[in-house]
Length: 252
Length: 280
Image (cartoon, rainbow over all chains, first blue to last red; front, top):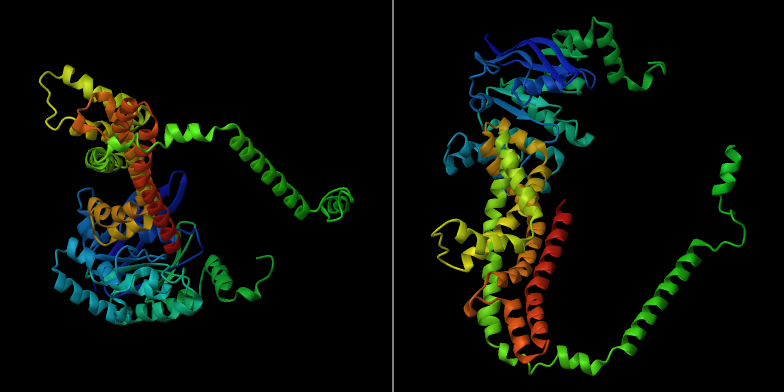
């Protein structure tokens, strides 16, 4: 299997603050990678560097053989290969659900209205919000909005999907519907990079789990190993806090 | 220590001399009403009602204003205000985009423009356009004189204010919108025009409507650049007639005609603002 995404010695700082201190990772085509870690560990920044929403200070991001960090790369064209789903959905509030999903197909890929709407409806159907095509984002629940956001990204035919804490802004009872859609995507063989706090999802769906802390990848490997039998002290502490928060020592 | 501070803030503090907050509110309201009634009484007693009526509400003195009040003056007021508004809107939008550009010279030019035209009185700008430019640039013609002069003069000033309004609107759109658009492969300018600007313009419709109200009033300044009878607007017609009949009623009639336009616009602004608050 070839590498879909290759991250080489990636550094990123905001002013004095070093957020990424040399990240190396690779994602094979069809793999699902979950990135876990405490907040402030740099996992969201890593994801945002992969599609260059943040400009890395050093290192490379190579997507299907194209070095996105090269100075002469057409970043708009490169980003089309990468679908992104945000924590806060970021649907376009002035457009209907259908227009949200068709606008970049039409303006960027140059698809005609009929074709774009057909693709949009297929994807909306797939994520279970087909009947909401005429609604506006404000009329939808958080879970529905996030599923529309997934359909919007899928409609650009991405080779890789990036998820930045896709369920963190949702009411607890709406988390499941979004995770179900993501699991379905994974089953269909989509290459996915997921920043998440949903350990159960990571355990069951991820081929590989990356644990990040303080700007480094501390531990990576199969989900069962990193979550089930972590080697590093920091991974163990983090997982204990996340998985069993009611039985901690006060001193932790 | 903790004990003493509790006593100070407690309900029994100050003893019986102090009024309860409710009593104090009632007393203050009564005092304010009394002042209001006293002022009204003074006004009624000191003002000579018949004199006021004769100088401001003698509608015979204003009858010469019709029908020119509507067919000429109101029409011209609308043309001056709306043409200046259109120019100000387009130029203001361009200036706002320059102000937000990543290319520094654009930002400098825009900032300099805004600072200059926001700081100059509209009257002075109109004079410079009306008298200064034709002399400075030999053979410069204003083919639609005075309409083009006014549109440019008032529009240049309005653009400075509208540029700042547009900029605030663009900055009020959450950054996630631009990120989402860019992550879908849109270029920066495509994302700006398809995603950010439509939302920004919606946000600033109320303040932009206020700017239209301002322009309706500022159109009264055009009389300084010398206009023909056919170019008169409400204030000029009102003052011409007032001088002719030596009575102030034409001022009142002209003023009422402004309100005919500006009050509905004001109501519209409040409605739009209420609608925006609700949709948030």
